[in-house]
Length: 175
Image 1: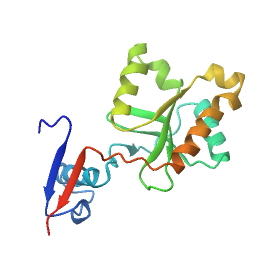
Image 2: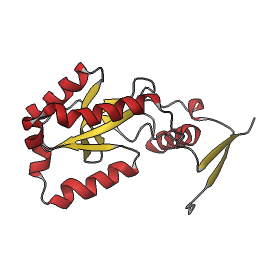
Image 3: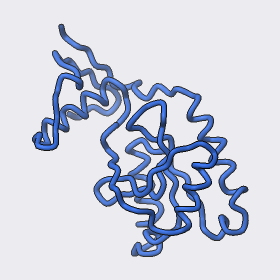
């Protein structure tokens, strides 16, 4: 429970062996998600599609432009009060996201301080494995193409590169 650099997990079952439904206890779901993380190195269930609409027309414009470039986007994805304005879906790995894009929309302007908006929220999301990029509305309205091109290049790179995120966790299934 105090591992800082490495952890070895020995289990007689894998995440796929745990059947979890909507009425399953939270501890069982957490065990399934933890074993899934050990197997893949990806935190699949830390983020949730909320079904919430985008907070602003600015977010809608960013999503529409990304869709035009061939990327699927979901608005307001998150958990525990930490929501990403635009989440770009990883179509190769279902349930995963390539990147989160923060827009200085309604959520940004309603926060109590800059620290709440920027540093704290971004740090927490990055610890959960997100790549976060920010687009400022003033820059977007001046030149949307210039703001989005570096993000599109990075997204295309992320689509093609397989990164091994499971260097420090090993799972051994016992037959």
